[in-house]
Image (cartoon, rainbow, N blue to C red; front, top):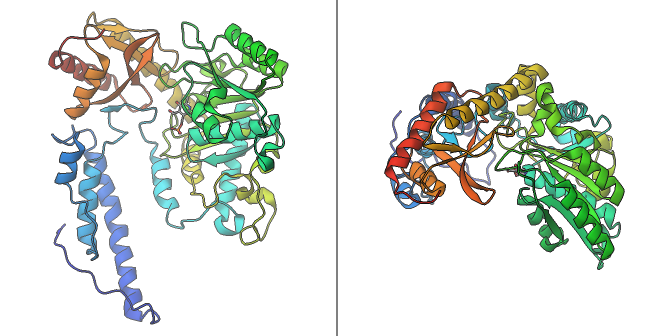
Length: 485
Ligand SMILES: Cc1ncc(COP(=O)(O)O)c(C=O)c1O
């Protein structure tokens, strides 16, 4: 492919109707792209396991290497394609074995393909009039997911990520605890939110956004395996009630961000009932275990939740973003999110106009990719995928425990394996591996110690990949100075 820059043909004058020649030119350009995209995608997949180029870990050096500048003149398609290729080639791939940094990784091919196709019609998911069959696809998913969660009568919405799903859950709980708040704002009510010390940062962030105040969040201590301590929660609830503070929401984390631990939902549900608080289950990471009968006991009690966050873009390998909030009782979303908009809601029943139940107006289609992957795998395929993730985590843990230079912090509660290299600081190891372009892995704190977190979310990893990951970490340990734990 040549990369010669050439000024494109001048655009049509806006005052003139498009000419036949102009239309042909647009059609040719579309054809060029439709031919180029699969070839480029194939190229990127072929090279995704290679180490990053030296220097790409430094934003200044990377920026100087790439041609990113925008200008007044447009470029010809081949020149645009060349720039796209080099920017994408310098982008980490979360489907590479070298990427174990985050809670997503590995691709479901049908999901990727459907994501690429969803932008062809490019619809917005607020009304049936605008999005047609896509609304029905989304509705089928919500029904099927609700059944798996044991929330058969639930409604739901797709959100741009688990943090926003948690935001909507907090909003619903706030409006139930303080019914005037949607219209008049919080009028001096004192509400409290409870989450574990290891719960996700979106809980206090969302409390700040919603006017509850970050100080309304009680961080409940965890037990020695990272689950919320139920006795400590009961004590905080009683203290708040005695001070005239109303417990508004208890957040049970199903799969904590660092350790992958699951809070005891059923016990938390009993306390939520006793105190009249909303029970939210943040299953952004681990919610998908509802699809895995052998692991379902981890999330036992989710069927008692008022709201449930579930991110298919994590354990299910569907492209970002794909997150769902399920709401146990129909009507709650409309009560908190609906607005009148004559210019938008013009036809059909509310049931097929999800804009009434969404925090957004224009909303991208995150349903098609999940539906396609689900069609391909069926419920049974998800079960196998999740079992494979758990098996990889157990295998990684066994390899770590067998190496005297490494220290396994705990048997993995789910798919995150926390460990340390004896005599080395985990942050220094992660930085070195990233800077050298060898491996993307993160660190976190467990029981006051900074540890490496190996996330076994990519089921396509083989045992040899786990060996390669541990070899990279051993190489980093010889390169960084002694220090830390
Ligand atoms: C427990 C938990 N909740 C919520 C989130 C936020 O999800 P998202 O990144 O999709 O916003 C995360 C992300 O890692 C998480 O681990």
